[in-house]
Amino acid sequence: MRLSLTMLAAAVIATSASAAELTGTLHKIKETNRIVLGIQEASVPFSYLDGDQKVIGYAVDICMKIVDAVKQELKLSSLTVETSPVTSSNRIPLMMNGTVDLVCSSTTSNAERQRQVAFTNSHFLSATRFAARKADNIATIDALKGKPVVAISGSTNMVQLTQTSTARNLGVAVLAAKDQAEAFLMLETGRAAAYVLDDMQLAVAIARSKDPSAYIISDEAFSKAESYGIMLRKDDAPFKAVADRAIANLYRSPEIEVIYKKWFESPVPPSGLNFRNPMPAVLRNAFANPSDSPDPASYER
Image 1 (cartoon, rainbow, N blue to C red):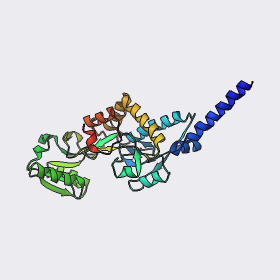
Image 2 (spheres, helix red, strand yellow):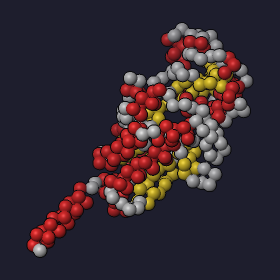
Image 3 (tube, one colour):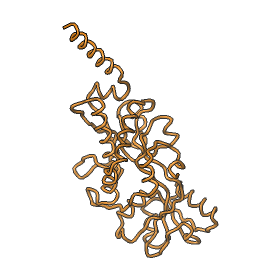
Image 4 (tube, helix red, strand yellow):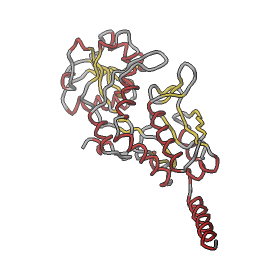
């Protein structure tokens, strides 16, 4: 009897000690039995609302893998998942003040942001490329030599286009558009031979066009690929470890191919747009070597 009581007391102490060891977000989730996902309502196809106002998207699917891992880590029989809308301007403050536990969207993980918040292993890479009409047979940046090429006025994309044209002595006639709609119209009507923008935004613009099959997106890029990550609080190593482990396991499994094709190579709700954006080699390499590095060069190895 004494031995049994001693073992019981030891088990209780061990359990209490284990619970006491929880800190940060894991402790918060354990205490409240809820996890809050910050979502963007119109960041197609990463995080948005479908026709029934349900939160869906590529980043949301990845976040749910983290939720499952947290539930398992904390040995919870159930876990309430709540969502909270965030914007580009308030997502970092809402993360830092504890309103949301994960931000599931198309958030660039760069060095400046990593001074305020943390990011999981990268789940997407976006670089500046050009779109062209398939019939024009323009496949490389050098093939733009002497041609009119449009970018949005004041954008980073325009700076990169201008710098590349100068560095390669291409003599590109750089055209300035006030917004994405005007820029694509210039490409569509032939006033521009190519349109320079972030590749994912080009894919969205093409999918929404009158004839998506009439356009291509260049393989060659004007910039190194910048990474997107799921945002979480800084200096919360235990929670980040759970999140990174969940994502690394996903990247090692065939399921990441299924999830990627679901959102980038298949019709997506509610309107059935298909972005026809196959997984690039640089992203496939990032999945094979999971990293939260904010350095674009690190993904080019």
